[in-house]
Length: 76
Image 1 (cartoon, rainbow, N blue to C red):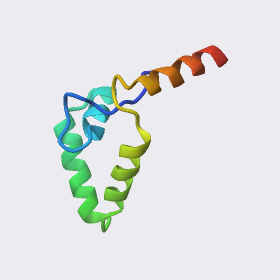
Image 2: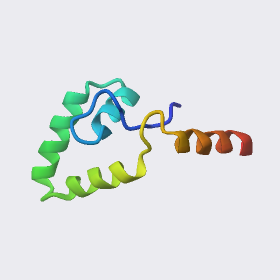
Image 3: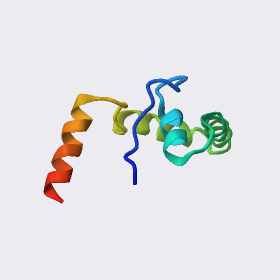
Protein backbone atom coordinates (compact mmCIF):
# COMPACT_ATOMS: atom_id res chain seq x y z
CA UNK A 1 0.00 0.00 0.00
CA UNK A 2 1.38 3.38 -1.01
CA UNK A 3 1.67 6.17 1.50
CA UNK A 4 -0.62 9.16 0.97
CA UNK A 5 1.08 12.46 0.11
CA UNK A 6 -0.19 15.87 -0.99
CA UNK A 7 0.70 16.41 -4.63
CA UNK A 8 3.21 19.08 -5.65
CA UNK A 9 2.25 19.03 -9.33
CA UNK A 10 -1.52 18.44 -9.34
CA UNK A 11 -2.83 21.08 -6.95
CA UNK A 12 -5.37 23.87 -6.86
CA UNK A 13 -5.06 24.86 -3.20
CA UNK A 14 -2.98 22.44 -1.14
CA UNK A 15 -2.64 19.28 -3.24
CA UNK A 16 -4.94 17.13 -1.09
CA UNK A 17 -7.25 16.13 -3.95
CA UNK A 18 -4.30 15.61 -6.29
CA UNK A 19 -2.67 13.30 -3.75
CA UNK A 20 -5.90 11.39 -3.20
CA UNK A 21 -6.33 11.04 -6.95
CA UNK A 22 -2.80 9.76 -7.43
CA UNK A 23 -3.14 7.30 -4.54
CA UNK A 24 -6.52 5.89 -5.67
CA UNK A 25 -6.01 6.14 -9.46
CA UNK A 26 -9.07 8.39 -9.79
CA UNK A 27 -9.03 11.65 -11.71
CA UNK A 28 -8.26 14.45 -9.24
CA UNK A 29 -10.85 16.73 -10.87
CA UNK A 30 -13.53 14.17 -10.02
CA UNK A 31 -12.38 14.19 -6.40
CA UNK A 32 -12.43 18.01 -6.38
CA UNK A 33 -16.01 18.06 -7.69
CA UNK A 34 -17.02 15.49 -5.07
CA UNK A 35 -15.42 17.60 -2.31
CA UNK A 36 -17.30 20.71 -3.49
CA UNK A 37 -20.65 18.92 -3.70
CA UNK A 38 -20.17 17.35 -0.27
CA UNK A 39 -19.08 20.70 1.19
CA UNK A 40 -22.40 22.25 0.14
CA UNK A 41 -24.44 19.25 1.28
CA UNK A 42 -22.71 18.88 4.64
CA UNK A 43 -22.96 22.55 5.63
CA UNK A 44 -19.18 23.01 5.41
CA UNK A 45 -17.97 19.95 7.32
CA UNK A 46 -16.01 18.84 4.25
CA UNK A 47 -14.14 22.15 4.36
CA UNK A 48 -13.05 21.30 7.89
CA UNK A 49 -12.03 17.79 6.75
CA UNK A 50 -10.02 19.31 3.88
CA UNK A 51 -8.22 21.67 6.26
CA UNK A 52 -7.38 18.77 8.59
CA UNK A 53 -6.08 16.76 5.62
CA UNK A 54 -3.98 19.76 4.58
CA UNK A 55 -2.35 19.80 8.01
CA UNK A 56 -1.99 16.03 8.55
CA UNK A 57 -0.99 14.70 5.11
CA UNK A 58 2.69 15.38 4.34
CA UNK A 59 3.70 17.00 1.08
CA UNK A 60 5.24 14.86 -1.62
CA UNK A 61 9.04 14.86 -1.33
CA UNK A 62 9.02 16.41 2.15
CA UNK A 63 12.24 15.50 4.00
CA UNK A 64 10.47 15.08 7.35
CA UNK A 65 7.98 12.59 5.92
CA UNK A 66 10.77 10.47 4.47
CA UNK A 67 12.52 10.34 7.86
CA UNK A 68 9.28 9.28 9.53
CA UNK A 69 8.74 6.64 6.83
CA UNK A 70 12.29 5.29 7.34
CA UNK A 71 11.73 5.09 11.10
CA UNK A 72 8.47 3.24 10.51
CA UNK A 73 10.18 0.68 8.28
CA UNK A 74 12.92 0.08 10.85
CA UNK A 75 10.41 -0.57 13.64
CA UNK A 76 8.47 -3.11 11.58
